[in-house]
Figure 1: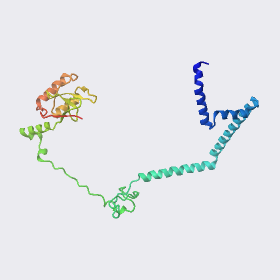
Figure 2: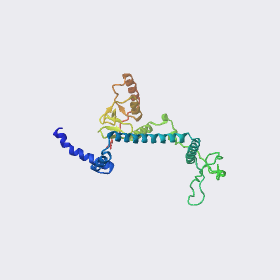
Figure 3: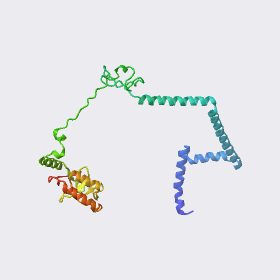
Figure 4: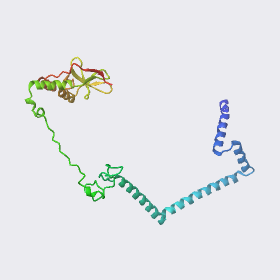
Length: 271
């Protein structure tokens, strides 16, 4: 045995002693002494047979317990009892769930501390509306609030068709819409239209891309360009859109009135 292994022996011996004491509650030396007293002077074969008999008794006991358990499971009385108890438990749980989920009476309490609060009793099966308990069935239909249909009144301006606006009125509407456009510098240092993520060039006042959460910028899509046209932004057409689409969009841009972003852009950075 190497010197290194010899050096480990004290540590191993200490670990074994601690383990034996923790499991059996006695010191290792005491346990060894007791074992020696039991086997002292006895033939090894006799000791082996004794251990085999103990194992056989243990195995027989286990088999006996398994047999009794199987007999109990096959006993008709136990089967009926277990089935009845299982059914009873299931019905009890189902009753609790149904009672909890059942609708409650909505009739307000007239007196006491809970005045004005809903009755809370389970709804009666006789209730046609499914809202009243048996006690308050007579109130069915009386507590229902009459819904008043509100007809929205449109102003003369809203009812007036677009082609009937004067040039000054149209200009005023366009300017109002333009000033309401909110463009701010985001955390990446780009000027971004709030809500759409479209980026605007500070100098040319044209949309050129869309901000991504990782800081990258992707080209405008057809949907983004349609949104720019709706808002009134000028835009730089990406290379991935065909020239035919480019011509169509430029013609539409020529027909529409130019909508520049208001010069007073909020310099507040996005947080």
